[in-house]
Image (cartoon, rainbow, N blue to C red; front, side, top):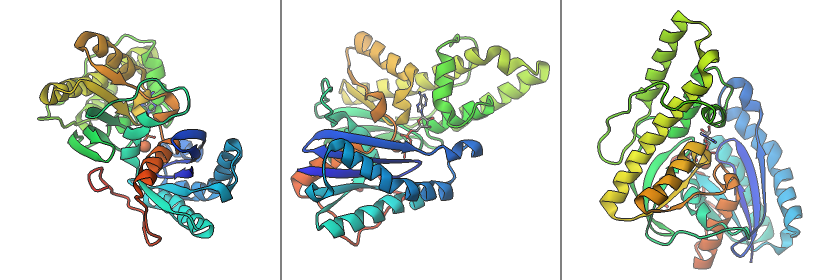
Length: 339
Ligand code: ATP
Ligand code: FE
């Protein structure tokens, strides 16, 4: 069977083609337009999706060397995400499925970030076995999830305010770095001293997270220091970035350690854009040795938004005959447990 998968939940338009569970192509068009606004502008995102979707799907089919008439089903991101963006992928998928008279499969974007570990592009090493713990760390979410089966997931804890990706992006913005600042902050952090400055860690009960206090304390810190020395940021950029990253990674690692203790599960996977971060990747690798965990870290291209992860969920649902109806609509708020 051949599945076409479409992802359009935020600011990346992506299409992938799978042959059974195997990814044949995964094309991603990243929208540059948001850079000049310092964040994603929803209206511009949906307009860019409209412009990108046909060429991106076309390229994915060409790269896979598959004609659309050969497709068995179309999988698409139903939510969560920006309504205008989701509508483009949803409407496109519904129309194409109707035209080709093939089934439609709806996919929850956050489930897909977790199930990205089952993507098969021919280069994969081990996959997690059930049950495992997944920490989804992205631009809109921060969750610790108990994954009992492909479609049996339980959220054990989540952020009470900002997502960790937002914490990275907003900290970077305070430092005057362009959007999206997360990857840049990571780049400078690798050159700095993580112990140079100390930022407070939030006191949040259970397995929940909070990042808004950290953002505020970074803002006050920078305001205070630049009053004394206007060049403070330029002179200390690497050390500031390293210290911020160290604090965020510590917050994440403390919680996931707690989750391992509570559940007794030592298989730990991460997913979502922030899993591209060098600090969290090396902290997990270190825990593998020190704590005896088995850790699963996605390849870079499957950390941020991509259609290959939508495709693998599509394939798993196809096998179960779990199809969507033509009257299905996009869902901006859509929890893992609902789907
Ligand atoms: P969600 O998946 O919650 O709907 P999203 O799809 O917008 O949100 P992703 O594409 O999964 O989010 O992740 C984007 C986020 O990942 C951004 O906040 C970006 O700054 C962050 N990010 C990407 N690479 C890195 C990195 N190396 N270090 C830190 N943050 C990073
Ligand atoms: Fe995402």
